[in-house]
Amino acid sequence: MESGDLKIFQAVARKGSISKAAESLHYVQSNVTNRIQQLERQLQTQLFYRTNRGMTLTPAGENLLKDADRILQLLHEAQKTAQEAGDPNGPLRIGSLETAAAVHLPQFFTEYCSRYPKVQLSLSTGDTHTLVQHILHYELDGAFVYGPVEYEDLEQVAVFQEELVLASNKREGSLQDLLREPILYFAAGCSHRRKIKNILKEEAVPAHKIIEFGTLEAIIGAVQAGMGVSFLPASAVRYFQNRKNLFLHELPEQFRDMNISFIYQSDLFLTSAFEELLNGLKALPNGR
Image 1 (cartoon, one colour):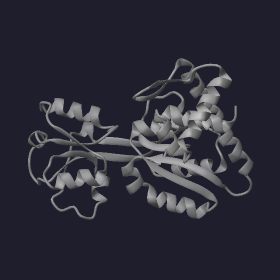
Image 2 (tube, helix red, strand yellow):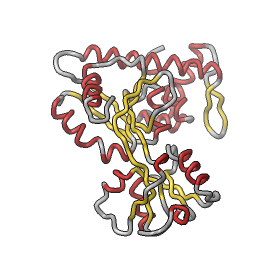
Image 3 (cartoon, one colour):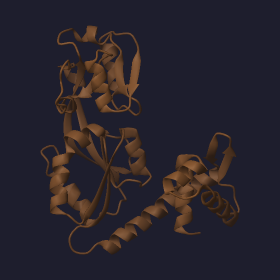
Image 4 (cartoon, one colour):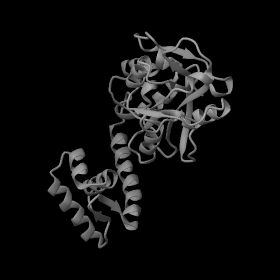
């Protein structure tokens, strides 16, 4: 069994199909199929259930995926150790909420990359749930998410504090009246939904229409057009230069605070590049 076999197995397990795995790995589909079959013969066990809807892991496959995640992470760490010499260098895979990436991180990473030019930084965005899963599966070294998150295996550093507000195209109106309009959410993994349900409950607003969007820009455009209202970090709304027909309304004090934390696996091998990143984050006004 080679590391390449485990990478292919991992991709098929994550994507749920041979074709999607082949596309993500830039392999031909027949090569992926052959390697999976070869791995099953070598292990003398079935790793996937094959159906018309795709491929799902058997119990043996689930066990192998846990081992594959750790083995591939150890290989990644070994590569980073071999590259460690002198100034911080090598790959650094970071994930972030879209709002944090747009508002809080550009200046921080500009200074970081200027100080450590040999570090190969990659920054991807996603919602909190997705980013946490990437961390748990060692697909990212660290991520900025709404916290705190409830996982014992994760280290967390509180780095930014946000204020949650209600964005509307109406300048005036009581919170109760504004909340009777459709609520615009991010399409997946919105971290505020539990808090929003509590707000609606406290304001005695019955459940009503929800509209989902994929990006912050789309939500703000829809709010400006009068499609509905949205709960957003105040700094993210103020980041947009075109704020015509866009007004921010304060929420009750107990619902305003939002914390952004930097998370990473407790057993992650800390390269000098990662340690310098942590030192920089802890030096921020809210870093702790």
